[in-house]
Length: 331
Image (cartoon, rainbow, N blue to C red; front, side):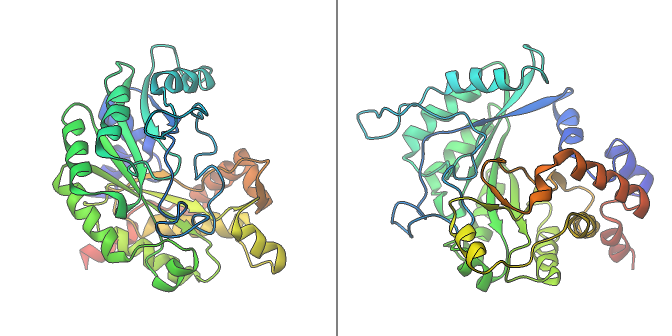
């Protein structure tokens, strides 16, 4: 496949965007609805630790998700009305999408397979059986994917597409211990193997800018995922955000550590894209943080400026995702 083929596949974008891939899969624009299943995390409830990963806010990466009711059911779980959450989330994006639009049910907050399989089946089925939902996306940890849960995801995937999003963040053991990730790289690899065997689409999160890592370290994580393709279908590149109330924010207040400038980050992300295969879908270039919680970097709050800078730099560098990957293959 040559660069012209890539540009056609990517609809003339400088990389394989999520919007392009979704239109190819579903034939129309599709929008994600962030949902909260009311689950916790083994890194918060004492199973592995308390407080979550060092960068994790009280919302568990689901600060933009529609929140569940405060009451509990007979088993001690929060009362969850997924249909109500979906309707409320659709209202939030109603200016961007028509009432008859197509949506992905994105279970985002905390660890969304950290509950009995029977409860997961009830929640996920409620979402996937709605006509306006075209796919199910589940954010979770690789150490919370027991065989019965993977089997459930396999069964749901037979009805509509199912994605699983795994927060790897880094491949480096020292950094993983520092951020309190709580599982080894071998656990991630086994989870990906089992998910792909079940036919599930896998998306992986990496954080760029963790204090213990140089750009060379970060590129090693990117290269690891590049050569994990096609088992890993998509990637989310996440700028490190320092958020109010996190242990990371407490550390930053005591002894500020270097953070990317906007220009450094944009150039580095483009370098990351050059290391990825052309078939890998780019779900995120930077990520959002609630402005009321954002401590640093301040520039990341101006999303329009950040995206405009990306557009300008792509034009200046003339870079296409997979260029270096393609050149390596051709040698």
